Image (cartoon, rainbow, N blue to C red; front, side, top):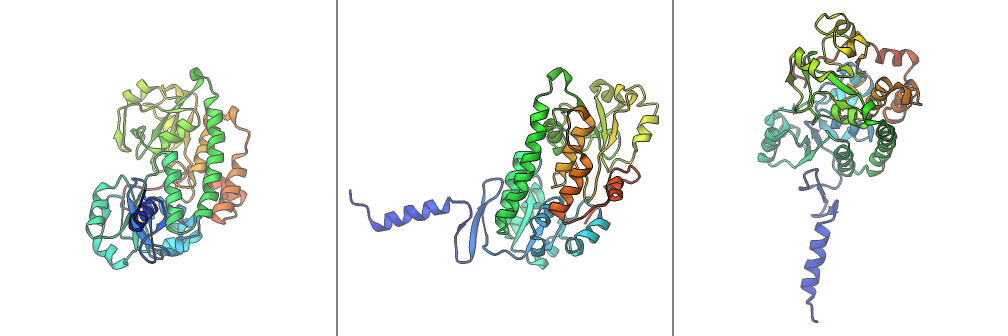
Length: 348
């Protein structure tokens, strides 16, 4: 059969275009974002803006934060960011999550923007001004890993990204194996207190994902999103095995234990009320530190099932990925319930 050279060439080129990370026009590569969309970006990207508050932490972990020209710090501890990640702390912001300043974004002249697949409105705005947009999704462990692989490809840091992913998978898989071994009738449910004790989150949030991984469940069945205001009666109906207050909940553990409205809840009677720890960010958020949040949650919900020392895990993690040497006092302060992250005002 006679096949023209032109046809063979076209077939080869078409095949190459389907390969993630294939070099397209001179000096550019094409990568697939979490939606599967092919995005053409510079092969050696040097000017990136993030409007997602969580991706910049992973970019720091893989050593690519020097290529950010704008970022969204979000609910991070800004004092700690300035101290331990001065480059991130000094960067301007073009917006975060639901708001983006297109004029500022264009002034920063990014080669691409990293955003979350959930930010439909600002993603549309960014695409309208013809800035390459790479979307990620961090709310499920599987998607978080895929998104970290994408970020690694963007910066040519595949090796560093894979090092973290291997660590993440090893820790999460070990926890999940223990969780799946727990008999169904012994599995616990967790109520998460958000910006108030009676505001909680649904099963589509990362907090519910780490509850599932440890062999527990989110008590707020049937809800979605992160800003669900519920009644005290509803909490009693759910009858959670434990109450976990997130760092941006203004009530303390002591407040809940002493509150007459909560005192008849079995979890409160049994003092199964905890505060999710935080350091750079709250540990239950979809950031690298969520490894520690998962380990900590397992240690307080199923203490009999853990064989690790959570304090050793904390020190090892921050030294390995953040180049931070924590003292014993630093670790104790992480577990303090004295302060909360404030989310009731815009974060740049």
